[in-house]
Image (cartoon, rainbow, N blue to C red):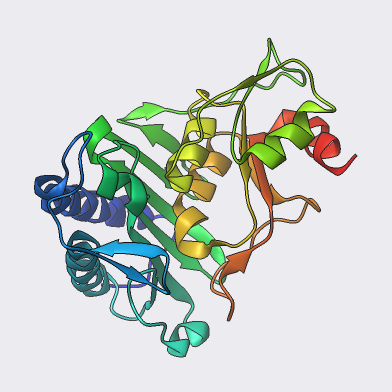
Length: 268
């Protein structure tokens, strides 16, 4: 397949969307609502859970996506990193199951996250949450959608009521000291879904601890951006993907017009 242009993203997206849905179909038989997964479970690095479903989805998606764009590099949570990706213009950045702890414990908030990055910036993002039957999609410069409905955040510069905030307690505490009132929402275990829910307006402010990885956020970053939102580090800088170290500092996700006030509160 030819390298994607702004005009060919629309033709590439359906195949990526189909791959995400098929990956969901592979994962769902292992999921047990409210109970431990039927998949084999082990820990890498002593504390990070991984299941046989993560590996199965990773293998499937790598095969499908590299067939669509063979010249692309590959970066995934469940694949040993290949530094060759650093020299590629295009890179697939994938988390086969974002929110493995949720998946393994029977919580519905987990998702399949797929981004295509060009020169460090996402140009295509697909996020599929099978248990919620929810698929988010964005294409650079073309908009964002949730189950086919266009996403567009309001352009108000103030919160219409208590700011609905989701994220780690220390970061929410910091925000609340300078923005009040705040409605504390339950922390969404899938970081990708937390950001996507800012894009769909069900969360006003999404806060992110340090050390989130490219695969956690790349697809959701584009979805948020195309819906009229911003994801930045707390110094205000935008994110660059496919660097040698794919880890990021603390971050905030919010509608673009609210970003100056929200990030000001976090830095006060």
